[in-house]
Image (cartoon, rainbow, N blue to C red; front, top):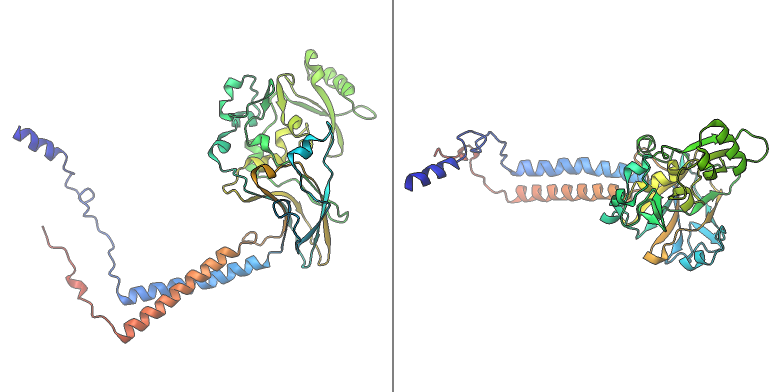
Length: 393
């Protein structure tokens, strides 16, 4: 037994190598007063100028922010005026007749400082937890890329929101079906707001696509496109099975008339049917507002890009935005904001980073001065570092 125990203990001993016995060479600096004072001084000299630059870049950003829904939305704001109220509740939406829209409101922003293009328009939400674990997981990426699912058992990743009534949601999941659906329109005739190129190119190219059996064609007939006329056009081209012609529809998209076809509409509810005020059937999940929304935020207070103004806005201009509110925030004590902002090469307004650098740099400089004074007034005699060696074992 003694011998067996000795062999077992020996087998557990690490090999006699520099790495396993922790004998590798290492830098073990001795923190002398000169080293400590010099380090604090160097950090302070670097951090303070960097902080000043970052704070200056942040101050160059011209930003206007206006709350238009949620607690405090009716309070006066120096940045904007709202008329009439933009607040909306679930009861307000329920009271609307089918197909009707809520009354729009106007937000007027008085630009008191020139805004150099590009100018970005954002919506901002507070107290909306897009980072919640169950919310983030509730999506089916294969479905978003165009794969068709007809069984709810294949969409377990979307739980708890897979179906609407007796039909499968396409796309399913909490993220897709909680889309921000307020419609924001710039009313100034001399200024255009573009709503394209607001999503990541990688998202548009690789992560979102219409269903594999989706068909769209420009209407080639005369007059106004109708469902019947589109059925004739698509059936003559052989693009749609004869037993599915009832699923052919017509719409206007970007000033042109289109015919479109979604398969299995009796069994599947598509995105344009859930959010007809935001999503056109021709684009579906390729809508860039939808793609921006699907990239979930890491904090409960976030803003997402809605549009771009690719021109300068002169001082004294009044920007008027018309908003048709549909996104409910009172149920989770949330708030909605409209944000109009310029950027610099470093990004949008973020005074905290510059202030943080300045504060840390100032503290380091103060500590360097304090330690230098202490060392000059009452220095402490140090031992000879040549004798700080380990004895051989």
